[in-house]
Length: 126
Ligand SMILES: [Cu+2]
Image (cartoon, rainbow, N blue to C red; front, side, top):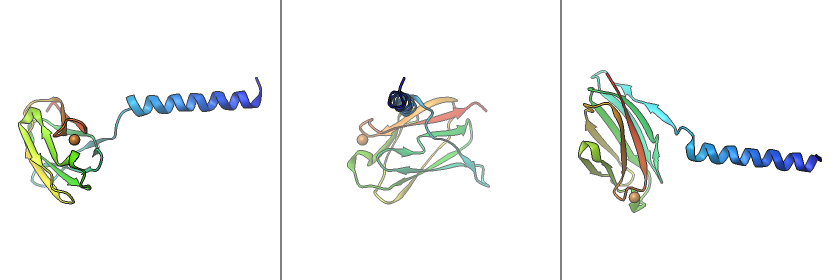
């Protein structure tokens, strides 16, 4: 096998690894920080997606998610937590706080109003 073939092989493997990571890899996962009042807080930036898009909290303790919408694209003007009956407008370039207490453990999806941008709330059993 010549040098150029080896290079092609390495580039091919790297490309496949990247594609696998991109589609199936663990997304950025962020655990909430707990305030003095016992509220689990996470700041989420909304810009073409949710950052972080996997949020880990504990069951039975109040949660505050501060969504900062850093864009005007209409796709993200609403965030919906279907399992919690929450649907909230997110004004552009403002922080919108969403407060709730997850009473059940499990994985819950949140999404924009069109269900295109998605994130995951992981509630760990108390
Ligand atoms: Cu959308």
